[in-house]
Amino acid sequence: GAVVSQHPSWVICKSGTSVKIECRSLDFQATTMFWYRQFPKQSLMLMATSNEGSKATYEQGVEKDKFLINHASLTLSTLTVTSAHPEDSSFYICSARDLETQRNMQYFGPGTRLTVL
Amino acid sequence: QKEVEQDPGPLSVPEGAIVSLNCTYSNSAFQYFMWYRQYSRKGPELLMYTYSSGNKEDGRFTAQVDKSSKYISLFIRDSQPSDSATYLCAMTPDTNAGKSTFGDGTTLTVKP
Image (cartoon, rainbow over all chains, first blue to last red; front, top):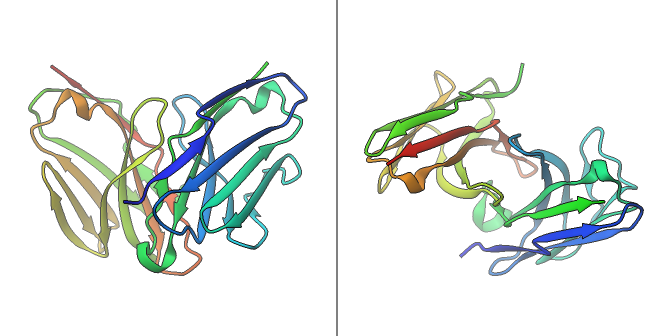
């Protein structure tokens, strides 16, 4: 149980294009989803927290207009990197939590590696 | 000072060794304590989950929480090369809006 998937697993795009990453909870309803980015050999950096049906809460320093997050259903959240640039190249990981049944545990997706040329 | 400090490593041990991974924290509101394992280029995988103080054992893994000292540990017995990964501790306060605070991770290599 508690499986989270991400799609795509890797993506290469040209500078200036937008990229959408999907995060799905496959066997539970995720009341909350989190988006992280991780640079090589560094720790997870929380970008934003999204609750189903409401606007995402962004961490300080994260541009909300650049990283658009939508959590339209209890099993799906999307992260869109708009007008991507090479400095946005990173490993993006989502996690999901069902507060009712899982309390404060988070289950992570496998990650999406984004390379912007 | 960070809320969660994790021994940075890297840690290299021979196969079969007992491994001890540790984190300290400063926020007394933390009630939930987790250990995640992350293989290279993969998402973190939840290994152990403990509520409040005490010990929890699962196979070769034992998680310990000492809230009085604000110190948590993960022990791995009979370590295997497949245990080679980065281990992250994480903690959450007991609130509905609680988000986890992660340590920076300790990279473990178990040599055959």
